[in-house]
Picture (cartoon, rainbow over the protein chains, first blue to last red):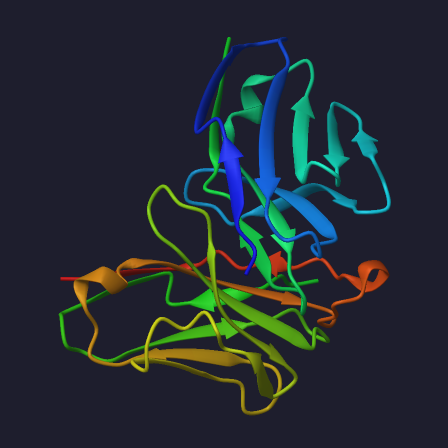
Length: 111
Length: 119
């Protein structure tokens, strides 16, 4: 089955700097890659996603890139703000809509 | 409209007891998923339903775990003879439908979870 690795496990940045989180996946058949943000004690919420026929997608301060050949995808957050502090999870979708998550990255934005 | 809801929000039980966790999906969503999230980890898939039937239960850790969705809406996750290792947050999610097609993936909306603590 699919396996998703995520790095780094923790990331501290100064407010206004950029943050990058990277994930790799194992199953070349996976074709959809969402990113979720989870605040402490809250539910995971989708922030951006990318499909395997697209290399990059941007939504305001966040962007995701996908390299299918290398089987890795990344989340980029620019101009970070304190409210970006949370745990971020990448995921890959196996057949049947089943999400396989990475272990998560704790992002701390210092003001 | 209302999102996915789960009850109870917290459940404390003793080792060996039976528990039931309930999930109310978004109205009209035919697919429903259960995940388990241990501290410091990402959610792990347990089972998903398409309508009333369990389409994939490959993530259930053992036969102490069982889930039902008798009318294609509300689902109950049942855990028998609970063990301390079952302690986790159990998340439910729903989507319009489940599909393996690239262009037809439907976003999964998560509930707030049930925090299960087995003493």
